[in-house]
Length: 181
Image (cartoon, rainbow, N blue to C red; front, top):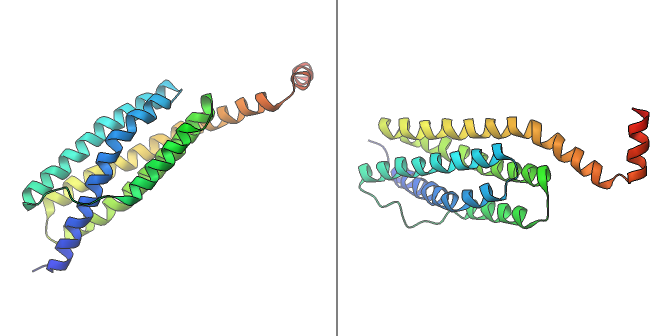
């Protein structure tokens, strides 16, 4: 018989993740609105729908445990979301804003991957195989989102760097470098 302490920890961690996901449901539309890249905006919108599904999976788990998902604030995600809001308040333009948003979004994904990895193992130890499967599915989606952000960054970051160089290079230098090319 699994220890009641581990079960309580499991429930508390699930509540923490539930709150984190509900915070993201509110934050992702703002991130999408701040994105200048259509591809990044669409990615945030798709992840919003996926995040709503994560919330539903968690609610399904809470229902099977006969527990409420409410009652815990995820201060870790709250801090990460605040950092993301700070990024959006900066006066970054174009690809530089997108690069900053990708950075903020990857912090979110890595936080979630750590949290879901933990609760998957707790569910396995507690013999909650259905929960483990649902949580593993979410963990895999978080990993895939992180991979998509990494791929997108491979295009966005050089573009942000190029835009920045164009803004800081005096016009006369740009003309002479174009002539030399």
